[in-house]
Image 1 (tube, rainbow, N blue to C red):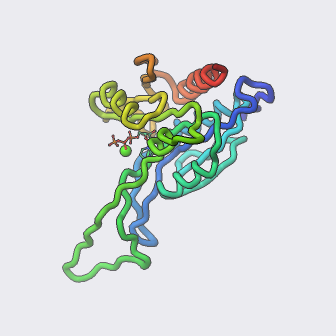
Image 2: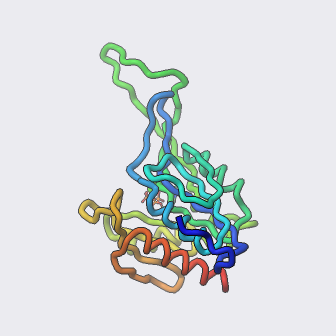
Image 3: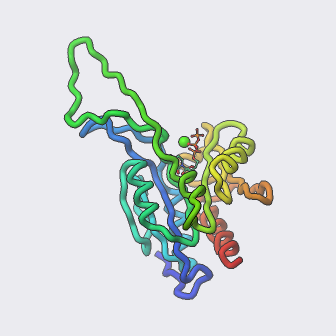
Length: 224
Ligand code: CTP
Ligand code: CA
């Protein structure tokens, strides 16, 4: 593990980052989740620590171990993730790399659901809070820099540009996760940075390189 720069460009800056999937319980033994490995969020947190930032790492159950040198907050559900992010504020920046489940099961069963003759279960859903939109639209105490992600399979730039405006964040890191790109669970990522200055296309690179370049850009923005 590389040592944090005690005097790096992000020294004295506090940054909150969400990472990994969320798990939404159906009953005590079952849940709904997604294929996020947590790799990209973990790499970003590591890169921010390396530049000297104080990082609060709010993570769902990921495949990869959390980075060293962060304040780790482990959560399972989207609602717990929102609570943890709010509790971590104020911050100089917030980076929302988590793959948050859009829906949760409306009525979590308190005991294990059992097979019954002829009766298939029907699940009804409720929408989870949108953590990125909630923080982006805070009227008081909003982090000065809010960065969201947009994993898209179609019309990547158009969808991500609309998403940035809808959520109210400063930057969107957009990536193509359609089958064949190997992004989910893979080592590489091809991203586009969307801001009020337009679209910046980055070449395909490793997730660690994406993270380092993003951390540099965050340091530049917080420097003013
Ligand atoms: N996000 C969040 N809370 C949610 C859903 C998403 O904070 N409940 C954040 C993600 O961490 C990401 C960004 O919002 O930074 C975009 O997530 P995405 O799933 O692409 O956006 P959605 O608004 O959920 O739209 P979609 O219907 O495309 O899933
Ligand atoms: Ca979503």
